[in-house]
Length: 165
Image 1 (spheres, rainbow, N blue to C red):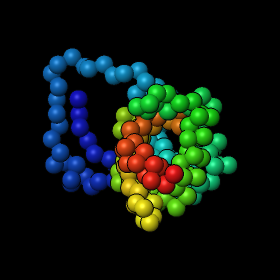
Image 2 (image 1 turned 135 degrees about the vertical axis):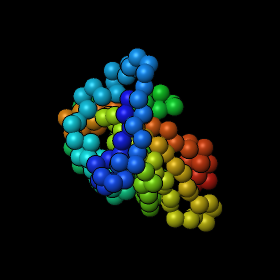
Image 3 (image 1 turned 90 degrees about the horizontal axis):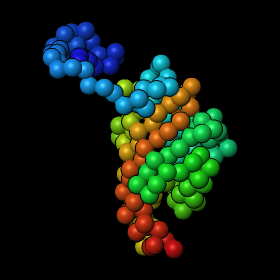
Image 4 (image 1 turned 180 degrees about the vertical axis):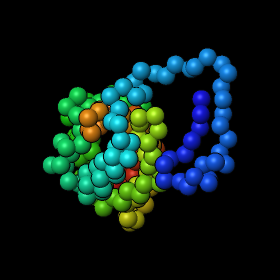
C-alpha cells in the first residue's frame, strides 16, 4: 500500500513522503467504495460544491435533478431515504431555515468517494441561534450523486425547530 498526496502539491514535498509498504496480503476493498466512481475526482468534488452552493445555500431546488441519479439513496442515522424523500427533506429544511449559510470546512475525494464536512448557521433569532454540522460521504456515478452517507448534529436542529415552532 502506498500513501500519496493530491497532484496539486510539489514534487519536492512529495519526495519527503515516506512510502509505506505493506507486507501483509492486500486488504480487500468494499465493492461499493469505487464501483461506478467517476474517473475524475476533481470533477466530483466540483459538482458537490456546486450542489451545496445552488441547492442547499440558495435553495435552487429546480436544478437538483442535474445532481442526483434517478436511483439516488441517502443513508442516514434515521434510515435510508430515496431521492424524492431526500429532496422533500431538503425543501423542508430550506423552509425552516431560509436564511441558512453553509460553510464547507472540508471537501475532498478519497477512493472514489467525496467527503464533505460543513457547518450551517442561521442568523440569530430572538429565541435562539441555530448552528449545526454535518459530514457527508458521496459516491458519484456518471457525474451524478448515486448514494450518500450523512451524519449530522440532529439534536441542535431538533432544538432549533422546537424553539422556532
